Length: 278
Image 1: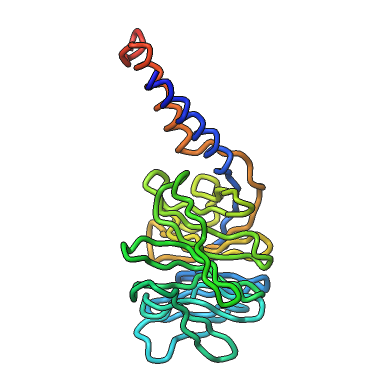
Image 2: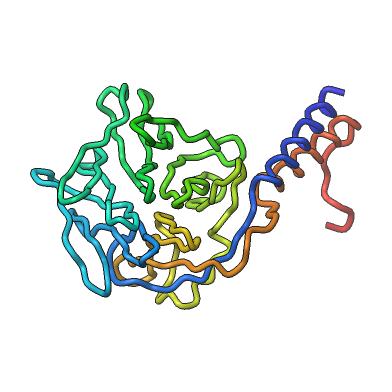
């Protein structure tokens, strides 16, 4: 009976996780060399190349660097041209009207804060490290920091909030998960929608090998990120939605099925054995 109860608990978790993990498809097109992290509704993109950040607009690059900082990474941009990022991989910043303002989650004990996305209402998302150096997402709105809900139950791994839509209802989340690798998700209304890596059309990306980062989202659902080619330096990509989110079994429910079957066999006192003729 003990194994049967465990099996039923696993099955319940499988149904819940299957409802949360959904898949959406994107067609990816290449961008110039560099790490692209953010996009707004005007098609302007931001990122970094080496130790400096950049704004990419109308085919031209503009350098962005925090004065006195060793390195600057630019991650997000809204339609008002406000930009967020981090400097020296320690402090977040907001760049607005020609001025840089530091962003740091309070009570982190000097551990890193990075700002990844901003919408037109000035809401900022990112990540911070706690005393155990575990990464947590955050929403910064109206002068208040709010932790992003922890999604580690259905998809355990390192999580960060990377981008936010203008209405604040959809957040782009990146998971560096042991089971699925670097995986992107959309978080909206309490549900996760998977956007890779299995549902990406990469045919137009030269020498595509793997996605390095899911980085930014705009109100049209377009995403930007960085990929690793088989040959040459990393390059950016623009992802255009082609199929809406649909239920996706995913890796976790499959593992749950395997565990449930094993538990039921133990309950019946039957050892797990290969099929006849194997």
